[in-house]
Amino acid sequence: MPIGDHPFPSPIGGIPFPHDFAPALLFTILYAIVVPVGIYRLISKRSRTLAIAGTVVFMIERVADFAIRAAEAEKPSIRTGVFFVSWLQSAYAMGFLSITGDLGNIARLFVMKTTEGTPFTVQIPPAECAPRMEEEQPLTTPMDPFRDASSSYSQVPTAEEDVFEDEPRIRVWLKRIGLACILVRILAIGTAVVSGGAFYMGVVSVVQANIVQQTRYASSIIVLFLQMLALGEVVWALLTRPKRTPRRPALYLCAMISVIMVTTVYRLAAMMSFTTSLTSMGPGSLNGPTAKALFYTFHVAPEWVSSTMLLVVNVRDMYGVNGKGH
Image 1 (cartoon, rainbow, N blue to C red):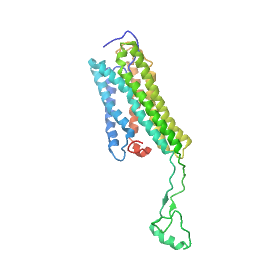
Image 2: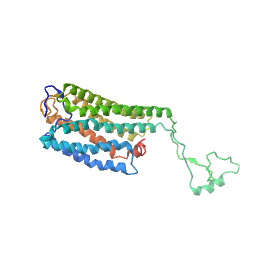
Image 3: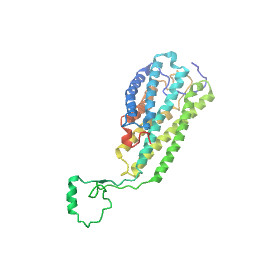
Image 4: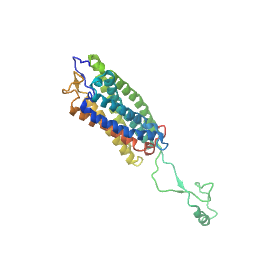
């Protein structure tokens, strides 16, 4: 294990020690339980949509991540290996980004639905009512413009409803925001890859340590911006168009976004920590029991809760996204 003579960014989640085995195993099991639900959502015709594909892949990867973490906790020989350290730091940097991407897409598509106009719907009276209507109507009655060509009586409205005007201009702006978010997300992915891939080099190089710190801060700040944007879109819909926006799905979506934001805020706070050794138990190393408890509580648990919330409901029906996720 290389030990640098300079402070370098502490690994998020620290290095797995024996006290990591139980929580790592627990989350391996929790993710493994939910993975079949996600796969079912992708396979079933009733719920199939690409809008949740990123989250399903994320959960499958997390099973591997925590299995590796549990193995590291039990085997000191692989605890600080280049591959395992780089793998976990890259996984932690990119995992919550997948959930954020899915929630952002769903939020945008959901809000776009609120800009669609209300179609005029009518209901045909029961067949047994037709003769009476024919008898009551005088022969001189002018043709009703809503008269069904295949029926001898007129259609009537189903009920008094709010009629909403179509808003294509707002949809155009939402589509533009969506395209911009794709580019911003690519930037977040790129910086996350760099921060994870270069992390181990930062242990022995001051220059690499600075690159790691700057890129992981940049990635997390971008993700937080995307999360706040998605949350803002839904809140905007609730506040400015309450009759157009289904309240329960909107609040549920806000809850999922708010939960995953906890992970981002935790990461930004933990990134202020530096150490001079991967296995140090000193202040700022993120290796102590308290630091590990905070990691599992504010980084790992919110990821699992948010992704589970997303997969246990039928997103296709609840938010009106089609099979392709748009």
